[in-house]
Image 1 (cartoon, rainbow, N blue to C red):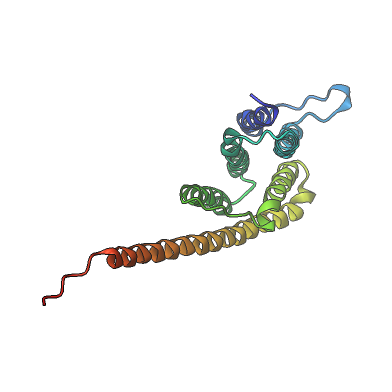
Image 2: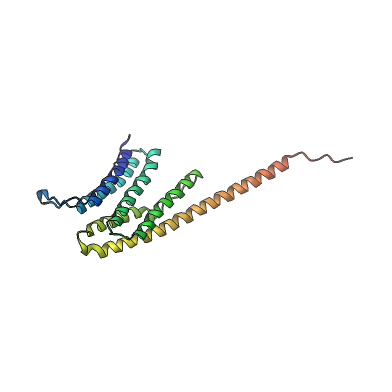
Length: 212
């Protein structure tokens, strides 16, 4: 297995680790004077996992190791990481459940549309907002986790959370419009092709003999 795919699998490995750390709330231990409460570990695991998202893409392009497995696993790993983090925050009562439903619903709706587009042979480029969405989500989750220990960060966490929700809705709408536009063009092209084929077939039929 190449390095980019290994990094993607490492990101998936971090998912259950993040859930355990956030929901078990490990006791505070401070070796070498470092804060080792669960918020510290949660943010550290989240940021490390997010770094692998950048790294796997970087090495895949640099080493020309873009594979079908990597294309399949990368978005799944991202969605597992973000979904597990937000669901854990709901369980910790740090985030309203309805917001998380929107965020996660967007992720899997777009994933479904992407699969349909792939089956139709369509390539839908991600928007600028879609590309920055992951960064915004990671920042929001990190601040929300840290705000559990530092309440002064809650206003910033709320602003970031709303930005995540808004970006989820807008980027989903952008993706759907691009998907529908390309799908509609494909349907029209197929219809024209069928009409052309029917016309050509009709023209090739021998004409009925004219009686003398």
